[in-house]
Length: 204
Image (cartoon, rainbow, N blue to C red; front, top):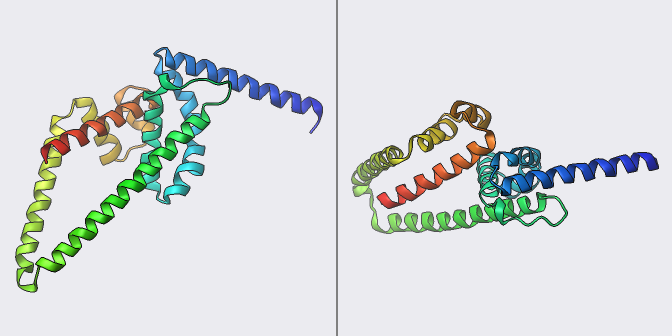
């Protein structure tokens, strides 16, 4: 590479960094839409090089990516610009989210193992029909709880969950239907899921 090419590349990187700094400042001043170009730029590398390799599951990785982007928007005022890209900060958020998934998965496996052990100890073939009936009743009750929880959510929260998690529409389509930017939709979905979990846990 020639000296001129190296100089041009360095200048391009410097301009990109200046633009990123300006967008971060705008977001920290309240214009959260300014985060959109940053998140769109770094979403792919976060997904492919940070999240997916650590989870190995595309569905879980996509959910972690959504949570990562939403958290970044929500906490942007806490970010301190130090003359370098925001990417390391985003990467750390993503890694923390991945660790949360692994910790939750371990707790779930321990609970599942405990339940299997309990069934093995307390059940016998003669009680299988009763156990099946109880399981069916619990599944119906679980679905009822989900419906009741969804009904308690604000309309926009309920719509966001239905579009993205039930109908599995692309983020772009969900944002368009709600009349918001993709960045705003990610935040909306994050808050909707958080509200759902809070209400659902309260119903238990």
